View 1 (cartoon, rainbow, N blue to C red):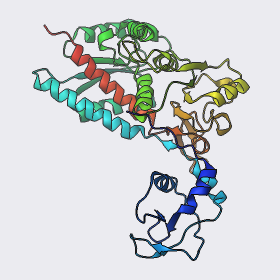
View 2 (view 1 turned 135 degrees about the horizontal axis):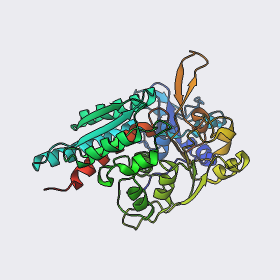
View 3 (view 1 turned 30 degrees about the vertical axis):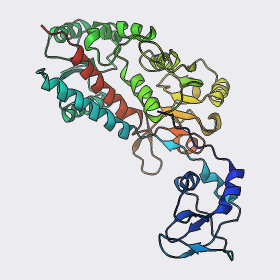
View 4 (view 1 turned 135 degrees about the vertical axis):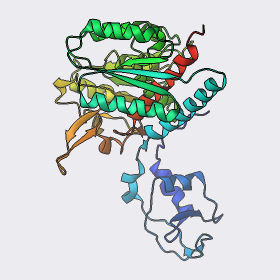
Length: 392
């Protein structure tokens, strides 16, 4: 399938070609002077961009077959409409997640039809962090909607690491459990790496086990970390070309690094990659250097997390003056800020969405972008684990 590209507007061409089109105010459509009611791809582009210049009445006119009124060719300047000509395609993670949900439901139906039990997702949740409880609730609710079974095991913040390891070992040996994840972050007295490595690699639906990370780096098939897989699927399903310059803002072992590995690797390997030229920025990258790198990138992936304290806060870290015209911008960040109008907390990303969408070719919103896709990829990984489970 040919990859769709962002619409790069040639203003001179529009100025010339608009003399061959007419705009009917009542039907709000552009029509061709020579072939009435036949809308070309150029005409459709104008409609998609919501370009609605005023009519300049001339002697020459024709009948609009949509509303039966006389319309006149537009030959005036369209400079007033230039600002609205470059608006990014907003990529809905919610819509893409629905596509994956249908695929997961189909896979579950096939598994059950073959006499297998439904996939089961077990989640271990430690402490009282509100965000973690929300994420886990969303995961288990989605699992239920897709036809999986799930269970959540709650443990207090005071739980010991030894107790956690024993619990994980129990689920590793349980054949009825297809996928197992431990919701992060964990209390400070627990070693997250030790916990992630304790989960059996074949049940590691978060993709954090050292074996899965190692296979990812070697371009082998594995459980890909869910957020990195979400970014990859957004890019792939949207048709964004990855052969070019990619800037990954953030180097975390669970998000930034796996995303970079997916994008830079060879697309002809066992686990196809993106053949991208990837540069990573992190908390030691000076802000002027970050701006320089972002201005050269065809794809910007903002996954700063809470590491960029030297950059005066993560929300809206990526601004419009940093982004190249027509670039794809994937916002992985989740930040809670106080709305100045309502006084309530609201979610924003690492990207200044309203400003950047005026320059970018593609952009993901927060919320409704990478978040729903991450949950969808956890579901997909759970089904993959169920398919690969050994039979006795």
